Length: 58
Image 1 (cartoon, helix red, strand yellow):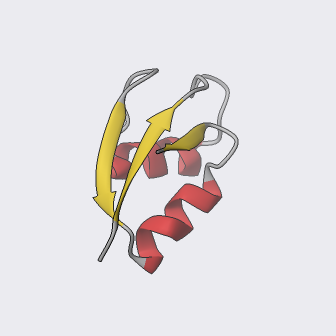
Image 2: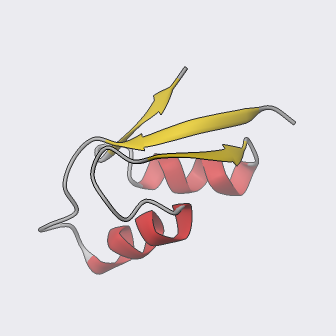
């Protein structure tokens, strides 16, 4: 499978608890951090849930 890089671009402050837990599950705990994951449907669903807080890095 292809891998994707995910970068947190906005703060988690003020986000609902479920979105904070989604960011934690992705491994994003600080602003401007980049993590790499396999492009699975579960990971893509998590990214879709917090799409306003993260971006996909090429």
